[in-house]
Length: 190
Length: 190
Image 1: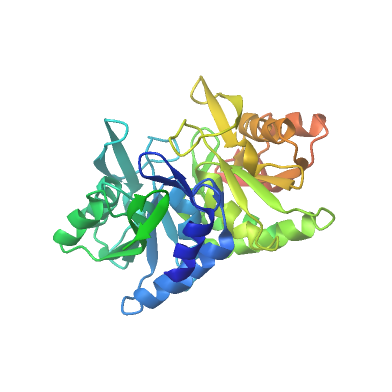
Image 2: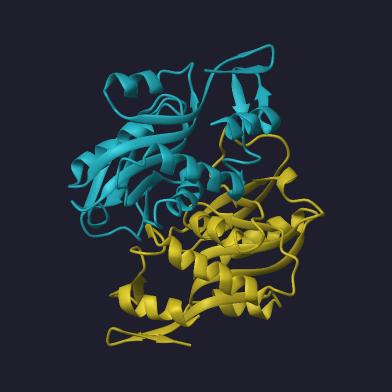
């Protein structure tokens, strides 16, 4: 998605260790105009699916998912929770997700009643690195009676194994920008 | 806001201990059509302010804030973070917030660069109970050079002290629905 790549080039801040910070428009401060354009792009890419529910994970995925939902006939958005909350009760679907960066395993949960056999689910997250969060969300859909239609991330870190892992499993993945490398401070897109 | 009250009556689930669960449309599954109506309502209520930034806190506030921002000329949304993240660096503003329900104190942070003297800030959260999260967000705005214009919550639990506490401090608070009591399973709005 060219608009997104241009934005990453313009406002992404390259740090050491191949990190590009996108906190000014994606995952701390959020540009809802960009999110609406992302929604239009995803609607095009998933035009063949009758998406009627979006699943994401707290926290950074939520803002993108709610705006993107507007492009899918204002379908409901469900966000999976990382901590047990008193707001969660009834039957829960739960999976465990490994965090490479933190070296821990955490539980991810969603109320069973919000993923039903009538739901055609698009899974969305902001970033894809090792793919464990995305795989956890897909596993939640598999555990429910809902239909998994595919997943999308705004930025895939192409130099980390998540994208390859998901594609090798035959999972439909739409990455709107894939950063393959950072050479002398320059961001190289796939 | 009548539409919201009607929705709470229709889809809110009354539990023991004066709890109304609104997880089917507000804070687990999210209804973006309702959020857009909330945006229009807030735009009316804050028509006198030149709001150009919305501040919320992860996680449940994010979805509402991003859709509401569309009613405020698509202004940027910043969400304060509850956990130190590697996505956060540079100068941070930090406050401590007490959680009554969990009996703990946690840090809430925002990057200083996203709250500037040019920002007229509306603070948004989903629920108001004891008011500590909202007070923390307002303190973050006070610590920055930004202008605090007011705050809004979707549901205020009128039988808990937060609303009174904020109003006594002279803080502008727009609660879109105030639940004062639950008697024999019936929700009583103020």
